[in-house]
Picture (tube, rainbow, N blue to C red):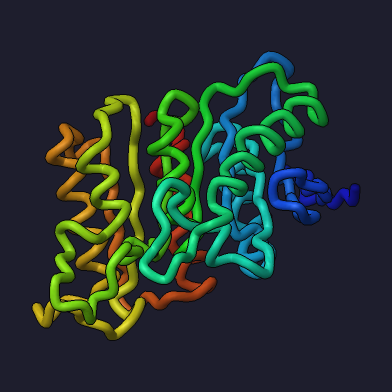
Length: 271
């Protein structure tokens, strides 16, 4: 275990030898350093922890904690592995290419290995709340896990979420985006969990594809239609935050731009 310190944050680097993923997983923990003894922190899990390293996440978190703009937040970032498109997916349904066959293993890793590891390593009996975020396929994975374990989570954040994930190729004659986008269907067929809150970020230059030729790129279209499905379930505008970044791309610098807004939305003082 390696430890670094920024003034208001300690960053610790761990390796978890996962039984479920059958590989070693790098896990970075970003912890507030000056927290009153009886203060209960919130937990934020993040897929694609290597992207937080690239964006120098501690420099994003540091001023927000220093100036008391957000409540104490313990962030745990899990690095992806070489088989990302099978690990970061929807666990119960494979996509049209058969991808996602390790998504249940990733889910088990998070729920049965990461959470116990955090409690044991940091002797934290409980958190005020737990949330989950991710980027691209990592965002799809985060929402899939939150949606399947709603009793465990309160908020989720999706940055450039891969909500195009589908179980039929769009080139097929009978492809119907209303039926074959997997996450949309899971929301449609799932329950309503009134405590859940959702943050979605998309960039206007996330991609160029426009599957249905409506003049709106698929990344935006798929996210907006997923929000519509959530609203049909009973969620309201105050449950959902949508951030569309002009000139935002499908890359780490864009997600770094959006992350402070996510943190203030989720854990801002006075919320």
